[in-house]
Length: 260
Ligand code: NAD
Image (cartoon, rainbow, N blue to C red; front, side, top):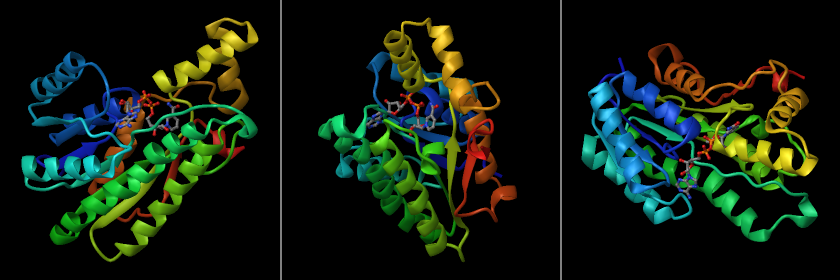
Protein backbone atom coordinates (compact mmCIF):
# COMPACT_ATOMS: atom_id res chain seq x y z
CA UNK A 1 0.00 0.00 0.00
CA UNK A 2 2.85 2.39 0.73
CA UNK A 3 5.17 1.40 -2.14
CA UNK A 4 5.91 4.40 -4.36
CA UNK A 5 4.78 6.94 -1.77
CA UNK A 6 7.18 9.64 -0.62
CA UNK A 7 8.34 10.77 2.79
CA UNK A 8 10.46 13.36 4.52
CA UNK A 9 12.22 12.29 7.71
CA UNK A 10 13.87 15.27 9.39
CA UNK A 11 17.02 14.62 11.41
CA UNK A 12 17.62 11.31 9.65
CA UNK A 13 21.41 11.36 9.57
CA UNK A 14 21.56 9.76 13.02
CA UNK A 15 19.71 7.76 15.65
CA UNK A 16 15.92 7.42 15.55
CA UNK A 17 15.49 9.34 12.27
CA UNK A 18 17.98 7.08 10.51
CA UNK A 19 16.11 4.01 11.80
CA UNK A 20 12.78 5.42 10.61
CA UNK A 21 14.21 6.29 7.17
CA UNK A 22 15.49 2.75 6.72
CA UNK A 23 12.20 1.15 7.76
CA UNK A 24 10.23 3.39 5.36
CA UNK A 25 12.68 2.74 2.50
CA UNK A 26 12.38 -1.01 3.12
CA UNK A 27 8.68 -0.64 2.18
CA UNK A 28 9.49 1.02 -1.15
CA UNK A 29 8.90 4.59 0.01
CA UNK A 30 10.97 7.32 -1.70
CA UNK A 31 12.72 9.55 0.77
CA UNK A 32 14.03 12.99 1.56
CA UNK A 33 16.61 12.58 4.29
CA UNK A 34 17.78 15.57 6.32
CA UNK A 35 20.14 16.45 9.14
CA UNK A 36 23.69 17.47 9.88
CA UNK A 37 26.89 15.50 9.45
CA UNK A 38 29.92 15.00 7.22
CA UNK A 39 29.10 15.31 3.52
CA UNK A 40 30.76 11.95 2.71
CA UNK A 41 28.86 10.11 5.47
CA UNK A 42 25.54 11.62 4.35
CA UNK A 43 26.19 10.67 0.72
CA UNK A 44 27.08 7.13 1.86
CA UNK A 45 23.77 6.92 3.73
CA UNK A 46 21.77 8.35 0.81
CA UNK A 47 23.37 6.12 -1.79
CA UNK A 48 23.21 3.10 0.56
CA UNK A 49 19.43 3.52 0.96
CA UNK A 50 18.95 3.72 -2.82
CA UNK A 51 21.11 0.64 -3.46
CA UNK A 52 19.71 -1.49 -0.64
CA UNK A 53 16.01 -0.74 -1.07
CA UNK A 54 15.72 0.31 -4.75
CA UNK A 55 14.00 3.62 -3.87
CA UNK A 56 14.87 7.22 -4.70
CA UNK A 57 16.54 9.09 -1.87
CA UNK A 58 17.48 12.79 -1.92
CA UNK A 59 19.17 14.83 0.77
CA UNK A 60 17.96 18.18 2.07
CA UNK A 61 20.49 20.18 4.11
CA UNK A 62 17.68 22.31 5.63
CA UNK A 63 18.46 23.70 9.07
CA UNK A 64 15.39 23.17 11.27
CA UNK A 65 16.00 26.57 12.90
CA UNK A 66 15.26 28.28 9.55
CA UNK A 67 11.60 28.37 8.36
CA UNK A 68 12.61 29.30 4.79
CA UNK A 69 14.85 26.23 4.55
CA UNK A 70 12.08 24.02 5.96
CA UNK A 71 9.76 25.24 3.20
CA UNK A 72 12.50 24.49 0.63
CA UNK A 73 12.81 20.94 2.05
CA UNK A 74 9.08 20.35 1.55
CA UNK A 75 9.38 21.83 -1.96
CA UNK A 76 12.29 19.46 -2.70
CA UNK A 77 10.10 16.43 -1.87
CA UNK A 78 7.31 17.73 -4.06
CA UNK A 79 9.56 18.44 -7.05
CA UNK A 80 11.54 15.20 -6.67
CA UNK A 81 8.57 12.85 -6.25
CA UNK A 82 5.52 14.83 -7.42
CA UNK A 83 3.90 14.59 -3.96
CA UNK A 84 4.73 14.49 -0.30
CA UNK A 85 2.68 11.75 1.36
CA UNK A 86 4.41 11.23 4.71
CA UNK A 87 6.06 13.81 6.94
CA UNK A 88 8.06 12.63 9.94
CA UNK A 89 9.15 15.52 12.16
CA UNK A 90 11.99 13.94 14.09
CA UNK A 91 14.93 16.38 14.31
CA UNK A 92 15.66 17.32 17.89
CA UNK A 93 18.33 18.31 20.36
CA UNK A 94 18.71 18.04 24.12
CA UNK A 95 20.48 20.02 26.82
CA UNK A 96 20.14 19.54 30.57
CA UNK A 97 20.47 22.07 33.39
CA UNK A 98 18.36 23.34 36.26
CA UNK A 99 15.93 26.08 35.22
CA UNK A 100 17.72 28.91 37.05
CA UNK A 101 20.95 27.98 35.25
CA UNK A 102 19.50 27.18 31.82
CA UNK A 103 21.35 29.12 29.08
CA UNK A 104 18.89 31.30 27.15
CA UNK A 105 20.43 30.46 23.79
CA UNK A 106 19.79 26.77 24.53
CA UNK A 107 16.11 27.55 25.22
CA UNK A 108 15.91 29.32 21.83
CA UNK A 109 17.59 26.45 19.99
CA UNK A 110 15.51 23.69 21.62
CA UNK A 111 12.25 25.54 20.97
CA UNK A 112 13.23 26.28 17.35
CA UNK A 113 14.38 22.76 16.46
CA UNK A 114 12.10 20.58 18.65
CA UNK A 115 8.90 22.66 18.43
CA UNK A 116 8.75 25.44 15.82
CA UNK A 117 10.20 23.33 12.98
CA UNK A 118 7.29 20.90 13.34
CA UNK A 119 4.81 23.78 12.87
CA UNK A 120 6.66 25.15 9.82
CA UNK A 121 6.97 21.71 8.17
CA UNK A 122 3.31 20.81 8.77
CA UNK A 123 2.16 24.20 7.49
CA UNK A 124 4.18 23.73 4.29
CA UNK A 125 3.16 20.08 3.77
CA UNK A 126 -0.59 20.24 4.49
CA UNK A 127 -1.87 22.06 1.36
CA UNK A 128 -0.46 19.36 -0.96
CA UNK A 129 -1.81 16.58 1.26
CA UNK A 130 -5.26 18.23 1.34
CA UNK A 131 -5.27 18.60 -2.44
CA UNK A 132 -4.67 14.85 -2.91
CA UNK A 133 -6.67 13.80 0.18
CA UNK A 134 -3.85 11.69 1.56
CA UNK A 135 -1.30 12.41 4.25
CA UNK A 136 0.41 10.89 7.23
CA UNK A 137 2.14 13.21 9.68
CA UNK A 138 4.10 11.64 12.51
CA UNK A 139 5.75 13.86 15.06
CA UNK A 140 8.47 12.32 17.18
CA UNK A 141 7.68 13.80 20.58
CA UNK A 142 8.89 12.00 23.72
CA UNK A 143 7.68 10.70 27.07
CA UNK A 144 8.57 14.29 27.93
CA UNK A 145 5.56 15.35 25.85
CA UNK A 146 3.41 13.62 28.47
CA UNK A 147 5.28 14.04 31.76
CA UNK A 148 8.19 16.05 33.14
CA UNK A 149 11.71 15.36 34.35
CA UNK A 150 13.94 17.78 36.18
CA UNK A 151 16.66 19.72 34.33
CA UNK A 152 14.85 19.49 30.98
CA UNK A 153 12.52 22.50 31.02
CA UNK A 154 12.80 23.64 27.36
CA UNK A 155 12.71 20.05 26.09
CA UNK A 156 9.61 19.22 28.18
CA UNK A 157 7.93 22.46 27.05
CA UNK A 158 8.75 21.76 23.38
CA UNK A 159 7.58 18.14 23.48
CA UNK A 160 4.31 19.02 25.30
CA UNK A 161 3.84 21.60 22.54
CA UNK A 162 4.37 18.95 19.85
CA UNK A 163 1.73 16.73 21.47
CA UNK A 164 -0.69 19.69 21.51
CA UNK A 165 -0.03 20.67 17.88
CA UNK A 166 -0.57 17.06 16.85
CA UNK A 167 -4.11 17.14 18.30
CA UNK A 168 -4.98 20.39 16.52
CA UNK A 169 -3.79 19.22 13.09
CA UNK A 170 -5.60 15.90 13.61
CA UNK A 171 -8.86 17.72 14.39
CA UNK A 172 -8.55 20.18 11.51
CA UNK A 173 -8.12 17.29 9.03
CA UNK A 174 -10.28 14.64 10.71
CA UNK A 175 -12.81 14.29 7.88
CA UNK A 176 -10.06 13.73 5.29
CA UNK A 177 -7.61 10.88 4.75
CA UNK A 178 -4.90 12.83 6.54
CA UNK A 179 -3.84 11.69 10.00
CA UNK A 180 -1.50 13.36 12.46
CA UNK A 181 -0.03 11.48 15.43
CA UNK A 182 2.91 11.65 17.80
CA UNK A 183 5.21 8.90 18.97
CA UNK A 184 6.58 9.30 22.47
CA UNK A 185 9.79 7.32 22.91
CA UNK A 186 11.34 6.59 26.28
CA UNK A 187 15.09 5.87 26.33
CA UNK A 188 16.48 4.90 22.92
CA UNK A 189 20.24 4.45 22.74
CA UNK A 190 21.30 7.14 20.25
CA UNK A 191 24.04 9.81 20.30
CA UNK A 192 21.53 12.16 22.03
CA UNK A 193 21.19 9.73 24.97
CA UNK A 194 24.80 8.54 24.92
CA UNK A 195 25.83 12.10 25.78
CA UNK A 196 23.54 12.07 28.83
CA UNK A 197 25.02 8.72 29.91
CA UNK A 198 28.59 9.99 29.46
CA UNK A 199 27.80 13.22 31.38
CA UNK A 200 26.24 11.21 34.22
CA UNK A 201 29.25 8.86 34.39
CA UNK A 202 31.64 11.83 34.53
CA UNK A 203 29.55 13.76 37.11
CA UNK A 204 29.04 10.79 39.44
CA UNK A 205 32.47 9.19 38.92
CA UNK A 206 30.97 5.89 37.75
CA UNK A 207 31.51 3.76 34.65
CA UNK A 208 29.51 4.32 31.46
CA UNK A 209 27.89 0.88 31.95
CA UNK A 210 26.81 1.78 35.50
CA UNK A 211 25.51 5.18 34.35
CA UNK A 212 23.53 3.48 31.62
CA UNK A 213 21.98 1.02 34.12
CA UNK A 214 21.11 3.86 36.52
CA UNK A 215 19.46 5.84 33.73
CA UNK A 216 17.23 2.90 32.76
CA UNK A 217 16.66 1.98 36.41
CA UNK A 218 15.40 5.47 37.28
CA UNK A 219 12.77 5.65 34.55
CA UNK A 220 12.25 2.71 32.21
CA UNK A 221 10.65 -0.39 33.83
CA UNK A 222 11.64 -2.69 30.95
CA UNK A 223 15.28 -1.94 31.89
CA UNK A 224 16.03 -2.09 28.17
CA UNK A 225 16.60 0.63 25.60
CA UNK A 226 14.09 0.73 22.75
CA UNK A 227 15.63 0.78 19.27
CA UNK A 228 15.40 3.21 16.33
CA UNK A 229 13.99 0.33 14.25
CA UNK A 230 11.13 -0.08 16.74
CA UNK A 231 10.32 3.61 16.29
CA UNK A 232 10.36 2.99 12.53
CA UNK A 233 7.93 0.11 12.96
CA UNK A 234 5.56 2.34 14.95
CA UNK A 235 5.75 5.02 12.23
CA UNK A 236 5.03 2.42 9.58
CA UNK A 237 1.95 1.18 11.42
CA UNK A 238 0.58 4.72 11.69
CA UNK A 239 1.19 5.20 7.94
CA UNK A 240 -0.52 1.96 6.99
CA UNK A 241 -4.17 1.37 6.16
CA UNK A 242 -4.51 -0.45 9.51
CA UNK A 243 -3.63 2.83 11.23
CA UNK A 244 -5.92 5.07 9.18
CA UNK A 245 -8.49 5.56 11.97
CA UNK A 246 -5.84 6.57 14.47
CA UNK A 247 -5.40 10.34 14.59
CA UNK A 248 -4.49 12.85 17.26
CA UNK A 249 -2.90 10.28 19.56
CA UNK A 250 0.47 10.39 21.25
CA UNK A 251 1.74 6.84 21.43
CA UNK A 252 4.29 6.01 24.12
CA UNK A 253 6.94 3.50 23.01
CA UNK A 254 8.68 3.62 26.34
CA UNK A 255 9.09 0.23 28.06
CA UNK A 256 6.47 1.25 30.64
CA UNK A 257 7.98 4.64 31.63
CA UNK A 258 4.65 6.54 31.51
CA UNK A 259 2.66 3.67 33.06
CA UNK A 260 4.14 4.53 36.46
P1 NAD B 1 20.32 12.19 17.47
O1 NAD B 1 21.15 13.24 18.11
O2 NAD B 1 20.89 10.81 17.26
O3 NAD B 1 19.77 12.70 16.04
C1 NAD B 1 19.23 13.99 15.90
C2 NAD B 1 19.11 14.30 14.43
O4 NAD B 1 18.61 15.64 14.29
C3 NAD B 1 20.45 14.26 13.69
O5 NAD B 1 20.26 13.76 12.38
C4 NAD B 1 20.85 15.74 13.62
O6 NAD B 1 21.74 16.05 12.55
C5 NAD B 1 19.48 16.38 13.43
N1 NAD B 1 19.47 17.79 13.75
C6 NAD B 1 19.87 18.40 14.90
N2 NAD B 1 19.73 19.74 14.77
C7 NAD B 1 19.23 19.97 13.53
C8 NAD B 1 18.88 21.13 12.81
N3 NAD B 1 19.02 22.38 13.33
N4 NAD B 1 18.41 20.99 11.54
C9 NAD B 1 18.29 19.76 10.98
N5 NAD B 1 18.61 18.62 11.62
C10 NAD B 1 19.07 18.73 12.88
O7 NAD B 1 18.99 12.13 18.36
P2 NAD B 1 17.84 11.02 18.51
O8 NAD B 1 17.97 10.44 19.87
O9 NAD B 1 17.80 10.14 17.32
O10 NAD B 1 16.56 11.97 18.54
C11 NAD B 1 15.65 12.07 17.47
C12 NAD B 1 14.33 12.61 18.00
O11 NAD B 1 13.80 11.68 18.95
C13 NAD B 1 14.44 13.95 18.73
O12 NAD B 1 13.33 14.75 18.43
C14 NAD B 1 14.43 13.54 20.20
O13 NAD B 1 13.95 14.56 21.02
C15 NAD B 1 13.47 12.36 20.15
N6 NAD B 1 13.59 11.45 21.29
C16 NAD B 1 14.72 10.74 21.50
C17 NAD B 1 14.77 9.86 22.59
C18 NAD B 1 15.98 8.99 22.87
O14 NAD B 1 15.97 8.29 23.89
N7 NAD B 1 16.98 8.97 22.03
C19 NAD B 1 13.69 9.76 23.46
C20 NAD B 1 12.56 10.53 23.21
C21 NAD B 1 12.52 11.37 22.12
